[in-house]
Image (cartoon, rainbow, N blue to C red; front, side):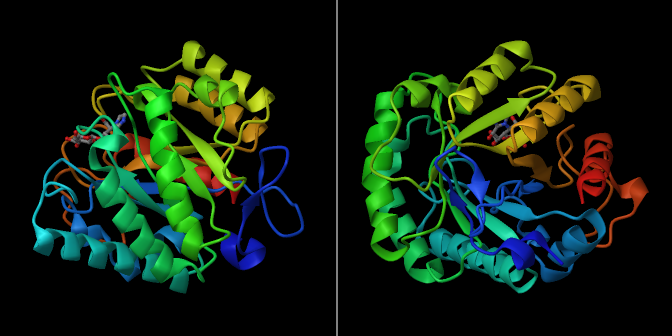
Length: 308
Ligand code: IDC
């Protein structure tokens, strides 16, 4: 039985925990795609089933870049349609297989979500219209605000996007990024978004780069009862490459588990970088074997199995 089959639609309780309708805490663990435009081939039902059955993932994050390489906001109309279709396939397969799914508005090069706010509003309105009855869908409204994007900017953006989602989808959990590539969660502690209760704040870590300093932000926010969700992490350097640090990764996983915070690993692809799940020579799109997996993916599959 998958977690979704067991727990159904989730919400955030008054203590900041992700819970089911019995107020039982639920921690989700899973993987994030790379950009949907970059690697559409991994959005296939067999692979989703493989991840669920063999790796015991609970959640899949669909990373849709907004600016990089055929991004949603920088490509043409046809590209938009293609991406909407890929998201739809991803949501559909996840739903059929009893998995949770995150629709990720993957800002990065476009550092401030206000840059493409009008597009975001239209996109999430469409998503909420389509998926409001599903119960397994999370809306992640801005991956990683960065450079000089302030919490005030993010809050202003969220306060426009959230009501549009809520027009159609009253209950789904909404995930909101935080400043400095989704690290400054203390900003949300000090000045939370108050227009919605079913909301979690996003923290991302890359274990070889982000250590005690970021863990202390996590602990500070979690102790204050801020609802946290790690929608992306890596075992390696923050650039998604260089060396893995499994010692630091283990410390992070232990911490997330201690606070019942869900986590999703970056990334499903065979790109030639440390954070990719598959070795570059592997062009399979499902039924992966040990030899196809890079080190971090092997490590994470163990983490998933240990928690299943
Ligand atoms: C990286 C990809 C890399 C791609 C780059 C695009 O791994 O293949 O060329 O984006 O700019 C993040 C981002 C995520 C990054 C990842 C690693 O959310 O998009 O992916 N990372 O750099 N935040 C911290 C690290």
